[in-house]
Image (cartoon, rainbow, N blue to C red; front, top):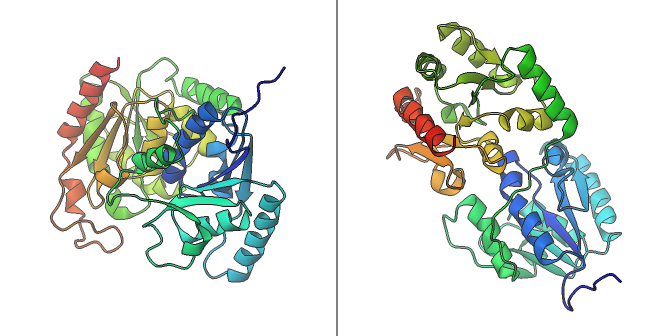
Length: 352
């Protein structure tokens, strides 16, 4: 006989966190905690198509609803897509929609779902249209860190977030690819430090020459071998790092999709990255990470957990994400390779 769910427990739950990579990842503990608390519920996640692989196959989700992303110039396409997804959501008869994003678009998706209970953060709309689309607001203090925001939502819902687990879904095919890729490069049994070269904006990137110095130092001390990570946009940066290194290193830049990226990061002993989604992916995979922060505050977007070290000089001219106040991005340049090496050494000592 199947055990019945407790009274007043939501039966059909929609989690909305559309984008971006890091934002979707830091919301994953919600899926795990809700599944522990409501084991009989049907739990779905709404996400943009470009980040669907982050949640697709997650063991705590029953369903992933995908919405296509359109540029702001294609308003008509976006409206048609919103209507299509709205119809699809209403067919599922959700009784609870949870806005983990806190933006007008995510609130709209909660509203279009038809769920009678729509929960979101109170101070995230900043006067934007859409406030009425959420009918139950959660107070949130200013400067709440990214993962902690998810935990605040869970506690409001009466769900215990502890232990905080991500349950990041590694795909078997991608793991096989990563194993074969590293073996073909002669790194099948070599301790790796993944070096994530890029970020969403140039002023958040650590200089290529600093990466090269760090790589030379790691090799000289026998700590680990580097593995360059990045998208197609980082191709030139990767080539410059290669030119500056004393020996050429293995590069996966421009060669991975999201599942393959996750599979490679899962095999690294440590990950070095700036303010980018890959650093949160590393945390979700249980890897030690070193975060390099300059124009953005790690208080808000920094990596979470005991195996994360953040290097940040808290420049007086920051934050300046969209409008840099200098041309040489000195706040990133001032993070010396020696400091990063020391952080890596400490993490490897802590978690051999």
